[in-house]
Amino acid sequence: MPPPGLLRTAPLLGETSSSLICRIASRYGLEAKALRSRWQWRNHQPKHEGGTSRADAEVLLNAAGRQLLAGLCGVEEGVLARALPSWGREDARLPAAEVGEPTAAWRTGGAVAGPVAFGCRLCTARRTGTAGPAVLYAPRWNRVCARHGRWLLDADADQPHEYLDVRRLPEVVAAQRRWAGVARRAVRAGAEPERVFALAQAVVARWWEQALHWEREKVWPRRLHQVAGGDAGGDLERWRIVGRDAVVFPEVVTVADVLLDPAMAQLVWVDSGAGQPRVLRVDGLFCRRLGERVGREWLGPLAAADHGGPLIAWMGSVIRLRRGAGGPLGYDNDPWWLRREHQPVTMAGQLRVLGKERRAPGSGTMWRAVVPAEQRMRISSLLGSAEEQLLQLRGVQSGPTAEVARQLLQGLGHSAGLVEAAWKRTAVAAVNGGVPLEEVARWADMPAETLRSVLRAGERGDGVESKVGPGASAVS
Image 1 (cartoon, helix red, strand yellow):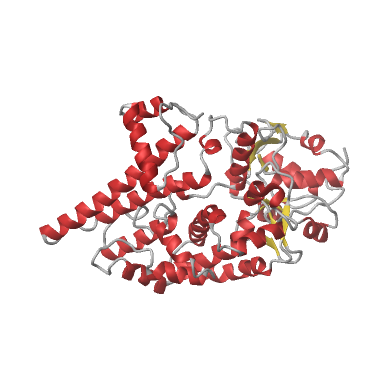
Image 2 (tube, helix red, strand yellow):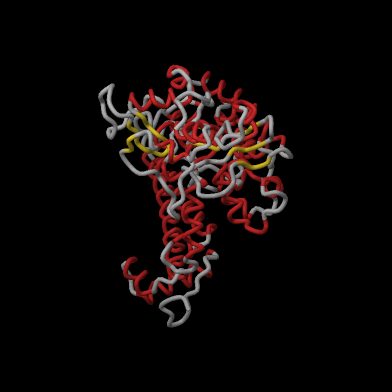
């Protein structure tokens, strides 16, 4: 083992401690595993389901372990503390004493200091003088290497790419520059930029799932083919997962700017009746203007009709704040509150599901494997619409008896219709996915023949496609 500090290895700003250890080992011509043997390890290195090591693995060190790392890279501990977000983080498995054996514990980067991404190898080589991989903590609004035209990908996914080429997509690079101004605007408005970005990303990610069936959407397919190297058609489903965050980034920044605009919030209030509650229309001013702002004049009605999504939830919060209704701050009257069900699934999560579906296609053991994405989205939209409708009714229980009763009964009736539509689509999805009709009928607490009649009537009445036939009890 070479003497500590023989070859100085400076940390990169925001780098993971695990990444720095790997780069030190590379400088000495060692395997990372050999260098890590200098520490006493309290647990095993995180791995993917397939057994490969996770690039986003992080290391927490005790005081003696930090001293050892500083000596190996030849850098003062103060410099490392400023550069490494995990420096000094505590772990119950590490000794509390300031002296003793150098000890380390494995974690995943996302559980320590936020999202982790691959660093740009060209920038790493320019800054350190040596080529090689690096892994950095990087929020999703700071993933563009403008110097080399690269979108840096999440490091927690089990996939081979470190970056996407965005040199032919200047709007993606420009969006990162625009975000700095949007973030400042958020601070002036008393909102946390991180929460504003998360909500905007959830809104646009929801559009992304629906856009596969938007015939008028031309921008995103062009960008997706670009980041896929010219043609994503060979593995479209996978590229839609890997390329999503880069492709939709310009729209995310624009939507964040829209949500912070007081004039746009005023349009939401006008669309709601401005004190005279009414159901939000698909041709409302806010969604129409939103479509124009993102360069899609036709998008307004589609966005307004997605009642189960985060955009309508934000609009509902704005309306309830204007009315002075809603629960305690931090829940339904907080515009930046992102419900768990609205949070977009990460690239790593989607790839895990895709891998399971491909290993067991059509098995019926997984809902996502047998129920098309459009049908799942429709069920979620119906449920979310019903929920939002009921929340709107919380603010109407005052005034003349006849008027309050009219609004409540009409709203409750509308919500019941939405729940019934979701119920039918769920039953159809279960039967089409291979669940015996008798089982579905038992869960629905009705005779099988009655359920069969209901599903047939639904198919004729609202376009719900069912494979239920005379005498059928399951999908043939």
